Image (cartoon, rainbow, N blue to C red; front, side, top):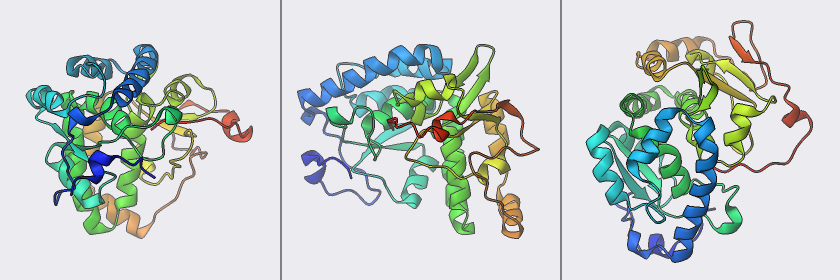
Length: 292
């Protein structure tokens, strides 16, 4: 359940579910929570995030005194990649979400978590949405990928294949890894905004790390309330964009004829395995928090 935000409650969302951010009405404590989250994550991501994330973070100046003013972000982001961030009161309906992405608008929650929720919050807040997602939108290739995803989402709805497309989003935009000469680097917002998973995803011997394969990913289930059992790894953003820019309709038609449901623990004979995880996190039932 989202935190009660009187600024949100006082507004009636527009037809596209957007609201005014009303940045001036954030409290001192809300700004302090942002600074706490930012300072904690920035120390981790210097070693674990792809360079593009860090470049975007610095270009957009996301720690200018507290919760960022979307108006200031948009001035920079529009010049860089033609994107803008719009405030929304909560998770928006799927069609509205895809419409925003297809038109280079990223919907971000207006509210920010409380101090007792620093390590985990069920619904994405402005820290997850802006700190986690927006730096990558300052990179042209990834910005183009997100626009294409939005357009693909509108098409997937017509074919009844949203679950397959959602898995691509989950294993790339939220929980994607990249292979580099310096080891695995994260670019997914679910990891970059998470104190626990930003380290777990690249350092732990528990999860599988497999080469990204589009149709394999489209048939792999996931959980959204725990650390991941598997991460899919790309070698470049060019690879990600080139792999996903093709027409998905033939894939949907093939899935209509025969579709599999792979568990995150599965390793298939066709998989390229970078890391065969011990799954010790799963087997030991370790209780751990995840932000984002």
